[in-house]
Structure formats: C-alpha cells, structure tokens
Length: 612
Image (cartoon, rainbow, N blue to C red; front, side, top):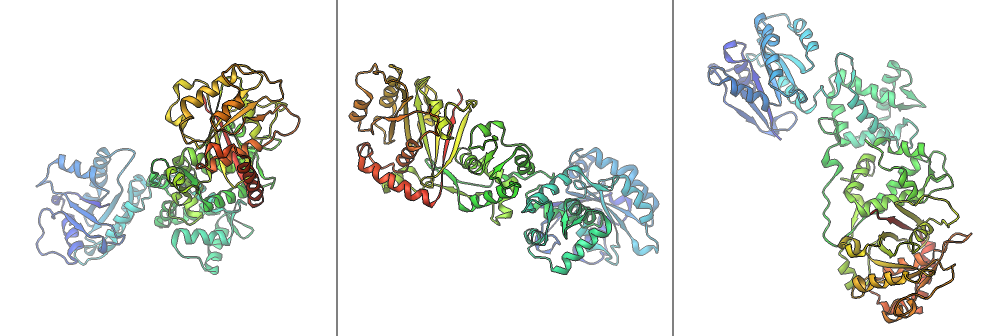
C-alpha cells in the first residue's frame, strides 16, 4: 500500500509548511519557495517503515475547498503545521483546522493528526506547554513534533512519526482520558495471552515467553532481559508476576506501559502477528487462507493438525479424565468470538457417562468439520492460533487435500482417511437404532434422537462419515448420492420394508461403482417374508452383493461393531467388485486386516441424520 500524507494549512498562513516539505525531500532549505509543492512519492527503500509514501501539499491559491475535502478524505495522516513563534497559527489549529478535518472524515475511521511546530530555530522556548492541552482534548492527535525547515532539525523525526501514526495508531489501542487500553485491545491481547499459555495455568513461564518473543519479534529474550521485564511488572502492580511467570494482569500492564511510553509499534507487532487488522478484528486473510480444492477431492486434517488439536485438548482437560466438562469446553472456546459447538454436538459425538465430550468425540467433531466445511475448520484453527503455535505459514498447512477419487479407482488404492457412507431406509426401518449403535448405545439407553452421531473406534486408522438419507428418494440430489459406500436398511418384521431398499438400489446404484451393503435390521424380531418379487438374499445374489447383514440394537450388551468394520472395509476398497465383496475370502482378509490395524491405532465412525 501507499501512505498519503496531507500537509495543512495553506501557504498564506506563512508557517513554513511548503519549505518543510521541500527540506524533507531535498534535505536542504530551499532558496525559492512556491505556493505549493508538487505531489511527491517517496520510494519504500528510503522510508523508515519501508512503505511508499505520497506527500500532498495544499494551497488555497491553486485549489478549491472541494479539492481540499477530497484530499482530507484520501489522506492516511494529516500534518497540521503551525509556527512556534506565531500564537495565531496555534489558535487556528483548534478553531479551524481540527474541526474542519473532523467534519470531513468518517466518525468511525478518524484520520490520525500530527501537530508540527515549525520555525523552532527562531525561538528559544518550546510551544509544548500550549500544545499539550490541545493533544489531551483531541484523541485524533497522535503526537507533536517541533522542527525547523531551515536547519533541518527533527525533519526525519517528523516523517518517522507520521508513518508511525498510520502503521501504529494510538486510537484503536488506548483511551487517553481513562489512561487505559480500550476494551477491544484488551480483548485481543487476552486472546493472545491464552493462546500463548500452552499449559493453561494462567501464567506465561519463561519457555512460553520466549516462544511468544520469537513468534512476534524473531528473537528470544536473554535470561536477564526476561528478569528485567518481570521486575518492571513487580514494581508497578500486584499479581502481575506469579510463580516467576507473567500473569494476564502483568501481560496487559506491559502493553499499557508500551503504549504510554510511545512504543505502540510493539503492541501492534504482537496484534498483527496474531492475525488482527487495524480495527482489532481478526483479518479475513488470516482466518481464511487460500486453499485450492479440485472437484472430486476431499479435505482432511493432517498429522500436524491432529497433534496440535491433541495439545489443545490436553491443555484444557484439567482433571485428566479424557473428557471435556462444560466448563472446560467453554474455556477451550474462550478464544473464539462465539461458541462454535452447541449442545447438539454432545448428542453427535462420543461422550462419557456424564454426557461430556470425550477425547475421541472431540477429534471426531474436528474431522467431520474438516470434511464437510473446511473453511469453517480453517476459521476455527485460526482462533486457536494454529499457524502461530505450530509455526506454520497458515492454517492451510494443517489440511490435506486428497487426490481425485477416479485416480484411486485407477490405481486400485486410496490415500484418504475419511470416507462417506450414505444410509437409505424407509420410515421405521431401524435407521435410528443403527445410528445409536455407533456410540455403543442400545435401545435401553434413553437418548434424544440427535441430528447426528460420531464414534471413535479401534479399526483401520480410518474415519467413516455416515449420512442418513431421508426416505423421499424421488428428490435425491447429486450431493445425497455422492459417497464411498451405501448402506440399505430394511426391517425384517415389516413385509413392505425391503421394497424401498430394492427401489433405491435399482434407481441409483445398480450401475454405479459404489459398493453397497444390505442390512436386515431388528433381527431380534421374528422375520416376516418381504412382499417383493424375490427374497433379500436372492436379490443380493442376483446383483452380486454380500448377503444381508443381521443387525439389532435391542440387546443388553453393547451392539456389535462388525457391520461398521465391513462398511469401512468396503469404502477403503473402491476398486473391489460386488462379486468380490460377497466372497468369504475377501472378508477373511478384511478381518485379519482389522485385527492388525486395531493394534496400530484408531478409527472414528461418524453418523449424521440429515434434517428434512
């Protein structure tokens, strides 16, 4: 970007404004001074903050009031020049120029002002005694610089402070009247403290302070420098240092001190490193970094992202019970502007006996969010400070974009870890019980029918997301049909239940390459002959599907997970034909594989009942 500096008042005021600009640019006092200096752009490599700078001079002899108002609206900073030996020029700062500027700028985005006392070479006294009350009256004024265009005194300092007023403005951070930081600044720094407090003990220890220092300023603090910082806090406030670490109160005090001593750039460097924009909101570019996802590809969390999320869980699981209580969950999401997980998530993922989200359920919800809405996942990781703590360029570094599924079919293998299973079944066919069983719940467990479920399970190190499609299959969209495996459920005690499954299969999946499995649900009830042209077993034989798999959740024990393991296996082997799937040899190999993978790690089963 280019900074635009506007210099006021007009040349008729005789305060030396144009001379000041020309001395700034040429580094020598001009012999001949025009009414107005030409517009000048100073390249980035010769400016203190390495930003191209556009300098605009105003002359009422050559420009109209309308042009002045336009320049005011375009300016990033306005330098109001007065003569230190002319009281009338000082009075006009408050009687005319500041009110004019305020009147012509947006209330919510006031432009910073620099008061410039020129001709300091002509007097031996300072004008600061007169200027300080003006600075206290108008929060828009960033600073005042006394200088001399003639002997070049403080000319470069003027330029430095003008750039600093744009890059590191005081206004959003600090309220001079209250002598304290503004609420938005405190809120942002509080989030930064909590993200940096890796063990969540409410204190930044030396290791955490050094990581914070390296993150923001690319250099660690020497041990003595760390002690000096803590000693400054100790001398000024109580409870700023605890157990030789910096508390939130101490952290906020330090930044207040930086600002009060004119070191705004320190606080701004920290804020911008943690993703904040000039309005102290998290920048959209920070929350939503670019991530290209080609068609037929899916999104998954990679190993580093899982390690980070595991550390976040451990950080907030204070009682080490491998579950997050409501208080612990609120604490985890305290760095978010809103609560991202509502009570419905507890009915969706694996919970403990108290209904609290377990470690497995926590990872499951993150996996699902990444699969279904990766932009939301990037946003959430941004709030947690993933790119900062994991030292990555952005949250996108934590996402794996899988290759096209067609390539998986060609190569007869897949690199994906998350699969989707669509469940079809008529009303009352037993879908809800099938979903409840994912969480190990039987019909004796009184739970509200949720919008979805997710389970963490020992098999394959794979995740399978199971979506229940409602019975009105005449209106199925491409999104309803896109999946890796299909589960068709019918009620063995209802003679008309199987017909629905047969229709769905024939209409949508008979000629597709998506593997299908038939589930004979409620197998604890007497089986009634299905009113269809052939039996479910014959139908499966005819279409080269595995035989119907019996299932019930009406049991005192935890329902069997065998069917879910088979569905995962089918999703993992998209190239295997239906004929192979009904082969006992294939399932024998699969069961051996399941045993091996159970030793190696974990898998999660995700169930989501799609609302009408």
